[in-house]
Image (cartoon, rainbow, N blue to C red; front, top):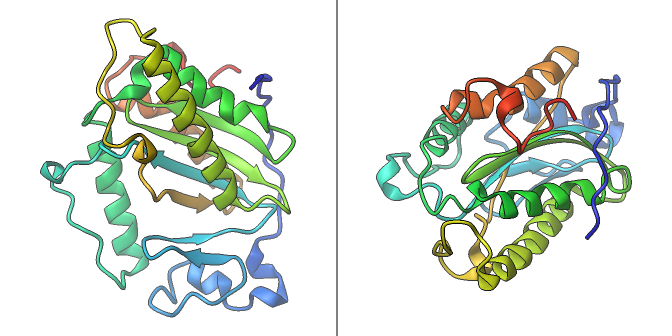
Length: 237
């Protein structure tokens, strides 16, 4: 897989799925006013865990993590359903705070593995999505993209996880990591946690906040003093 350099994509106003008559009622679900109703609108889906909005033309902030990154000892209570918008937001905040504590194998701290993840994002930049911002943390990642019609977010994320899992395992088997080969977080097929968080960008203010959050994540986790010091992010790229 050959990578290309990501280029910044300025915020441009876009039509949300709620503006499409076929998505009547979607805006209420996005904003949490109908969080307990069945998910039946076009573009929404759930695999029994988290609900996702999956429509082309949206800017989407995405978080996914290694399967061993949040042990029971972290103290995050299991998700209960149904949940209000506020409850889901609070649980997401708790999870991201715990992720920054560095639980698990933290395979992504190795430069060889972090590069595999970044290359996977870069490969289809401009082909299946626009890559806007990203950061690879030791046990999870944050990435912001603009989705394309014909390339559902769920399938894009699945392709990232599938490809990187295979490449990471091959890297571990070659034993090329500095400091020795760490233990895999469970079975190789379960390298990544099944689910992911996604949040669509509402406006230019939210867009700027999302990029700032992604780039400042290593600073907030105490991994560096300035965002520009973290090598596995899109700061300055």
